Amino acid sequence: MKRFPDSQAARRMSAAAARICASSAVILAALLWVLPLRAQTSLDDAYHVITSKIFVDLTHAFGPDTPVWSGFGQARMSPAIDPKTKAPFTIEKDGFRATFYEMVGQYGTHVDPPAHFAKGGITMDKIPLVEMILPLVVFDSTRFLAADPSHAFSLHDLLAWEAQNGRVPSGAFAALRTDMSKEFENDPERFKRTPFPGWSLEAVKFLVEERGITAIGHESMDADATENMATETYLLKSGHYQIEIMANLDKVPAKGALIVVSWPKVKDGLGFPARAFAILP
Image (cartoon, rainbow, N blue to C red; front, side, top):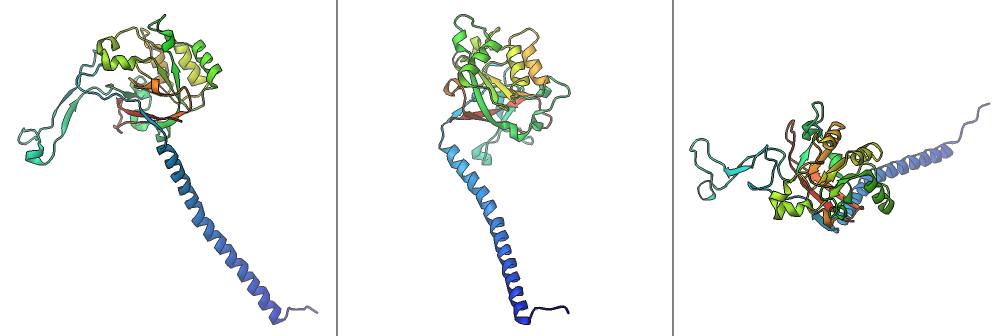
């Protein structure tokens, strides 16, 4: 004969089950509330850490007299004009003013996307946002320049840097310090000289193929001074971008900093002035 629990026992079991369900619902609700809160707290913590650090501007201001490759010519900047009246907009007359810019994209501190040299390469508007904030390593080539003013930073130089500072991290932004940025500001004609100190092809190939870097940067107008621009061609055709005419790399440590780089999102853009800064460790 089958036995059934009495009504009091059944009620107790039902009440216990209800309490378990209620407890589970409370725990789930708490998790759904706490997890986003923890994520937000994590971002808040990161923000407070970042804003407590020293920021270094790696960007030159540019104007009509900025040094540029002679094949492009100088920028022209003039007051924006009302197309109807042909008169410049002014604060007194219109309540605002604006500037009309005429310049090549590769002007001042600027980004070169892969499409600058590669037909099938991505344009600047397609570079992922995640590639705009990266670990920053800085290779100091200045100690070679007294004996070799147009020194190409070599694989041997790079390996010596790693012996002292550790392996270049995967995904990093690799910058080359030559102090040419001081010439950009103080001696523009010398800044435009060629040959100039830059990267060697072997060093950049090693960084791309063996260390998995994301991008490179340098203080000169080009990555290298070879006749066929072999280093720059290799880098861009391998799908990596570069930042040229950087500033203040002498104020950034060899490793441990972050770099943040941004530029206007020009549709199918082949290059444009960029803003770059370092966050020191």
